[in-house]
Image 1: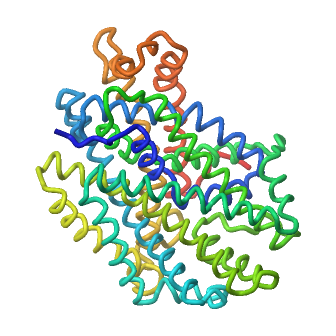
Image 2 (image 1 turned 45 degrees about the vertical axis):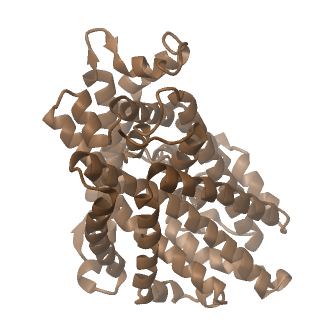
Image 3 (image 1 turned 120 degrees about the vertical axis):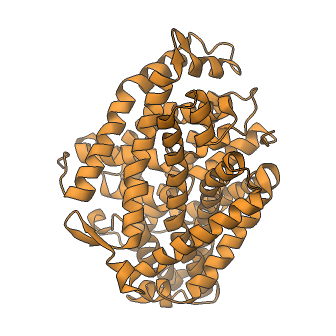
Length: 474
């Protein structure tokens, strides 16, 4: 029998832990800064509610109905179709490969945290410090430590591992985040950043802003990774999936919003005359090259120890978020090996650690440590590292494809005659669901405009990433 979450709260915190990550804490504020602030926030919120939420509901429903991970769920609900079994396998490979590069970024966060705690904040503001840190042999020790933490959590199972960690880390994450926001808002010029972030200038909404907001919303909520199918298999038939999905989306969006209230005011306080276009579009660059300078600047008024303490709290916050995401991402292939290959959780983790660990090491050395992997391949008119390849293919390209296939499955394959199995499953925990506006909207959106939008994102990504062509103008 499939192990279940012990409570609805446990599921929501675990699911939120999968969605809340580096993309929320840094990627969202950076995108907001570069795409009109409040205008981006408004468009993002609309997309979360009207596009991402129905897809999330569909993923959870498939998982709960089949009580299996993506491969088993697609196979069972499609009657053993080879095509849909392959689709399910794609939803297992995708999070596994995403975990490869996410592990490397999380290791960097851990290294920065340890350096700050040891009093090296000033060193981290030097121009070449980031390059030195990520090419240091010590990152492999940090990687071993991180993989032990993740493995220990996953071996413990759903209730005693994933759920327990989420119940402890997610509240801690919220407390630290709110504490940092309160502190930052009392700094000089901070309210200029707040105004820029929360007051929308609708004249700044362009096709580029719309595309970036949708991409951020889709990726931020971990849609298309098979996580919600897997977690859906762990929830009770009594739990209302729609309300649970709303809570997960609300929690994820709230963290992104609160992070914006921390990052943007901090940036304006540090440099009141800053041009937001100066900010790198890369979340990684902002975390490791820009933010240490902001924290060090606080030492002039607060002293070096307190400034370092605040920096340590921030990087601990990011580490917690990254750790919970990594645990959730790796649960998908663990569940696949356990259910389909009949491996024990320990054996499944051993196999994944061996393969994933090797790939993570290759990814880690592709930033200059090994030239072969640093200039691994060329496409889109540029030389790309192994890290770039994994990121571009599995995160940017396949995620929207997985979402598209999911919509097509629930709308056109998972039906017989006039029976809507998606709605039937959702009605088990909500007797008023059939015939409601929510039911009509979810069924309509998943079969019409959401697949079109996801197909557009997929085509745009392929054209831009691999052929240097964009269908969107600024």
